[in-house]
Amino acid sequence: MKPSSWDILQALQRALHERPEQSLANFWASLSDEPPEQAQLLSAELLRQQLYSGLVRPWERLKRDKQKKSVLKKRLATEWSTFEILNLQPALARKPVTLSFVLEFLRNAVSHDKLRLDGELNATFSDWEQNRLRFTLPELQQFITAFRQFREEG
Image (cartoon, rainbow, N blue to C red; front, top):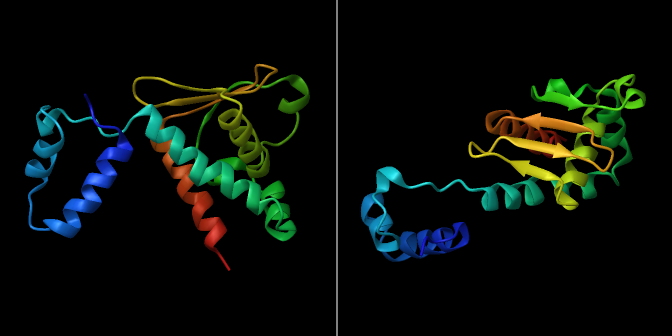
């Protein structure tokens, strides 16, 4: 059976404490019969966990910070990353796509299981009205990193 992301992280933590000199190839061989060069560690499961811990929960906390939230309502989402708008209802399309809007949209899509991932882990976020935003994995990583940096700013 293929180890889960959680299993891999637990095993890595244990190995770092007990056998820090162990090679990465030997570490992997202790977990899986799959050759290391074929290992696929990034998974839809891991990305969903990352989105929850790196976006959903922090956004919920940040919404209470009126000053930071007001900044995000004024800044365009493209300041942090590019992404594709697949569909926006006319009323939404007339408004600027702000960081606040995208954060809330992504939060809702993740929380309500309206996130679809393809084989390359590109993400399409949607809502109940069929509005959809699509991020490639690198664009999504860039967006999450920018959000973390914003939260950590003074």
